[in-house]
Image (cartoon, rainbow, N blue to C red; front, side, top):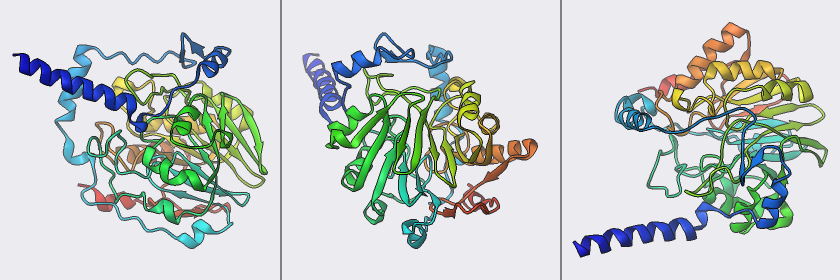
Length: 366
């Protein structure tokens, strides 16, 4: 009996040391930063909160239902074969205004001759350790980072593993000019060796003029945290990117709420919206939109062209992997919304004539 206690005690100590000391879990906002956050109306008792209630308490029955769902319907939750990715490096490296999607919520935007990378997640798995959790539908994309041109700015929407990827940042950090992040997220980057003077933390509604581009941090309805004890200690957001010829909005993660109309009133209309609409479930509907809500959010913010994001790379929910885009197509048709569906790795030239939607995913359905 004593040996079992020692064994399990050693496991607990090992896990605790790993979570406490491994850099993948990031840093902690300083005491001075936390004092500054207290001035925010959406910061209470040491944690950031949403503008609308977002109850995500897990009852025993909810946990049991999640366990059951995790064991059924697996066939449709990933492609039947790996998704090939072909990149047009000439387009990517040119000064022509463009957008390249790398799957999930990772984009490279070229605007005003600047390269802006959003939520760089090129790693194999959105997990603290690569051998646990969902695996990328395509090949590991970390090698792409070496081929990318100099990145003028990286925009992070929140600190979850599928948006802020430690291996990606470690490879990227020396080829990036500026990191724009929500409040508190800078602590992670500093822990990983990014110079503090290259990090700009933003609150909701902060607006910056940066090298001919307007960048604004706008609200989303989500949560944050990379470890067991740091839930909601950093902020989450969406981003507005305004150039002379292009106006782009990316929602980050989040549920549907009144903030979309406020964003549209302040910054709309938008030429292109990149709106979260995957990894949803009734049990966490307050913090992830269903595709129909995504289409409505696009209308609320006064978008012209819409692209659904947060799908196409990882399985993080219990719906089929193509359900988000197929539902979004139906909702967009009903609401007369222009929905574009580029292939993963495809570069779209933002010249006012975006290509018609195609159904590339049908070649990879189980």
